[in-house]
Image (cartoon, rainbow, N blue to C red; front, side, top):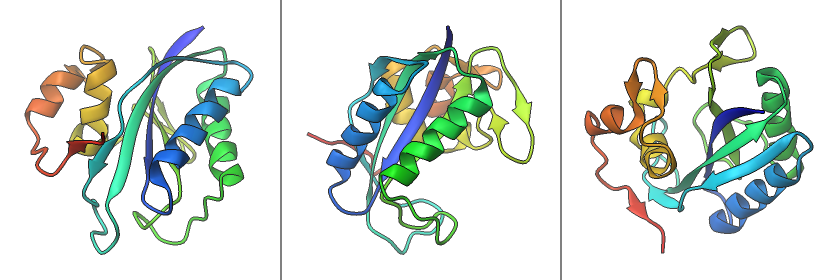
Length: 158
C-alpha cells in the first residue's frame, strides 16, 4: 500500500454533504483505505472569483492503485456525484484532486504529480496541513509552503 493525499472541494448545493459523500465513496472504493480526513474549510473562490464560496478538505489514503487508477477512481466518484465540467476553475458540485502520491512523480496529459499548483494554493494547504504538516512536496513541507501564502478568508467550517 502506498500513501496518497487528495484535495476535495465543492461550491454548489449542500457542500458539506457533498464532501462527506465523496469521502464515503473513496473509503468504499476497492484498493483505497482512508487514513485521515481534515476538517472542512470555508474558502473564498480562487481563479474565477465570480462564484460562491467553497468548502475544501483533504484526505490521506493508503492505496494499492496506481496513480492513474487513483485518478480514474476520483473522476468516477466525481461523475457519480454529478460533476459536470463547464468552465475552468468554475463552480463545481465536487472536485477531487490527487495532490501527492508517495515517491512518485508523473507528468503526462492526464496527470501531474505532485499536483502542479498544490504549493501555491492556501485553500489546498490549510486542510492538508491539518493531516500532513510534514509531508514534503516539491522539496518543502506542507507547513513551510503554507507559511509563505496568504490564508486570509479561510475558516474552519464548524
